[in-house]
Length: 195
Image (cartoon, rainbow, N blue to C red):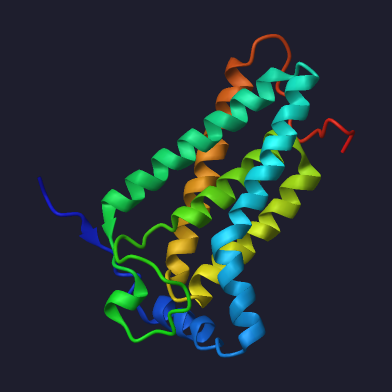
């Protein structure tokens, strides 16, 4: 079996320069603490919003959007695994001098698991459950991605890979939903509360 290719992104001038720009902004104790907490805990907020929206859909017996959102998350997860297998990339603190604010084990950096999950949830909510909450969760996902770079545990390219995995995974689920949903088409982006 051949070795996974090493991503040229991590040592490319654009990715590493962007990393340094964000990571070197650390040093403010308030902002550092905020970014550490965001990187660790903001994903829980995204998952909580997802759980509430799913519960509301189920209470209204609106099952198909929940199924398609779940399939979008499964596709996103699988694409993340494929991306990690295709591009071997160590974390920034393993190969560069960084301001590492978040304790983390060494290992695979591309794509970011936290950002992949956050963007997968955000896009699935946007497309299948609630446009309004989807937009909010996209902002949360962007903040999570930024914080992972700020804290020195990911490159910007890792976050870009996460966005791509999530976008393709949810888009694939949306495409299937348009073909395979029995009865009427999936009512995309309609919140149970009317938004």
